[in-house]
Image (cartoon, protein in one colour):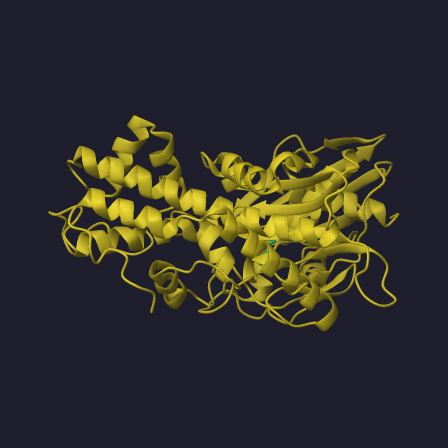
Length: 446
Ligand code: BGC
């Protein structure tokens, strides 16, 4: 068990300082993690072991001249979307006027397709129902499917789920051919004219969308509910053509500065020991790390002294990434609503508010610096002397919306690469998981 960082703190202020020291990551540590990450990439690629799965996508970089109209299914961590995408003369248009989307879990508790009690058929029928909102039984389309979970691909259209992540547990899907499940569900709805032809990870979709317009794009990443990165590999192995590799980097676990809170979170997670990096940097988990820190502070009498044992912060899963965002952005109205109505802290003291904001920022900065370390690892692998330009295409709610997150990734890269960091562009690439599926289908010439 990691050391008790708060053992010597006599006040809330001292406790926050101790936490900040403990969670801080100097540039030397970033470089150490980057190098461990680079080695893990090589190990995963050629020796097929180590923490990075290095999964083949069988997709290359698009030319920008791909054309056609395709259906895209985006099966993410939080919702499922269906889009009709047209590619023509380098232009991308979404043809459906209204978004066709649905949450995987109903916040009101009416349904939840992510529980063990849900079968694969029920889950894929739910997706096919969404497709039916956009397509009639007499229409024919080629469908690209973005499936944002670790999957082993045999070819561009055959992927079997290795394991669920992001706390999804739906039964009967692990080990199955995902596009076959989708094809069968489409047939059950009478949508046999819709043909799934390609399956890809959301990181791959993000890279494809950026590369459609930007010749320097060679890395794609998601920083949202989950976390993962892919890149374009010139030498994926003997007899294999250059292709985009889905690293499943959320499962990286070497040289990470794991605290006792990370250990606690991991132990109570669905899969202890798995996806350790993802559990330190992604929207699914960052709120829970904050809650565990607050529990520790409260248990030691350093914060929320009057809180009921059954109230906040003792009940589980009440702190979300959105809460961290509210705290950091100092949106006073939203903060009052959150503290008083959601967390039931009637009168937080000023030093408590300062502490909450500092802890939230500290976690976001650590997440950003960890993610930056892995990007630096990829750059070391693909361009060891850093001689050319690279665009890292990034999508996801944390990257787009969490105050300070993208800035701290950039700052960490600048800190390490100094003036050569101008060769590296971080590009917010929205909707990679939707549009990317259409581009993927188009690169294959359907
Ligand atoms: C999954 C990845 C995915 C990432 C972002 C992770 O939990 O394992 O496949 O790319 O989330 O959605």
